[in-house]
Picture (tube, rainbow, N blue to C red):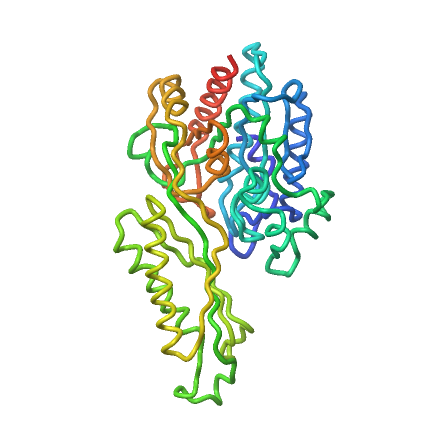
Length: 396
């Protein structure tokens, strides 16, 4: 908790509440410097790979490493625990292991991935997607933030070479096992009365941008029957998302961002961008939900004399974490529960390439991606101790 308190003033969002810390912006860069200093104070050697992931090594870097860590960025107006808890718990786990006189039998590292939330450039798990080759360098370099700053410009300003972005077989090849600790985003552990659990799976999920195009015009001078207002089909999409997801068991669909252009109060928009987040138990159900929403959006656009273009910005199929590793860690921690999650993580990207597991720390309300996100100090301590036990177990 003292580590979290040390960064409590970084990236505070006075308008939204909570924190807005995004990949390679001033707040995230400050947090990266903070992590580097904390790792160095523990005698860890810190390096930055070609995609901007920080690596803090306990001992010499090498293949087959036991790696833990998470991210330091947030969604707009996010909470204090999503991401940073996994990083601070990793530092605390090193302290606990050192206090036990433990020395790793394998290379051990803490990894901090950039832009996990996709809050700036729109692609979640950007760093791990680049490292694993799930996202091409060309596509990544074409990304821009809401101010028109490209990813290439952002990484260059952070001291990285944009030409180096891309599939990093060397960094990926060093990971023998990856374990990510995270605050639970939901109420599974509360209902099970357990402070710590392990992840079993992640829902299939993705993000789609719907761009509705109509005719910009004067709000007072344009008769209602003469309008081609893209805001109407945008509104229809929001309602369709609720209907489509409610019709598929376990599905979720959310519109959390809508941007009209030009955005004036007395102006009929010329275009409206709407971002859809859709998730379900498997690929088929997720795609079915998105197809239903897309059909409704297209019909509403046609009715208003508008057009709609749909862009898939990111997608990840269902992730089932390594069952043997999951069961081994759950048993080693005394039979803690295993539960699925609807939230995406860097661990989910890495799971297709290396044995991967996740530890969850109980969230008393289940609220996440919001300023009220929380975990009790005792539960955070239990999570750090569990992570230390897991790292020691895997290292031996």
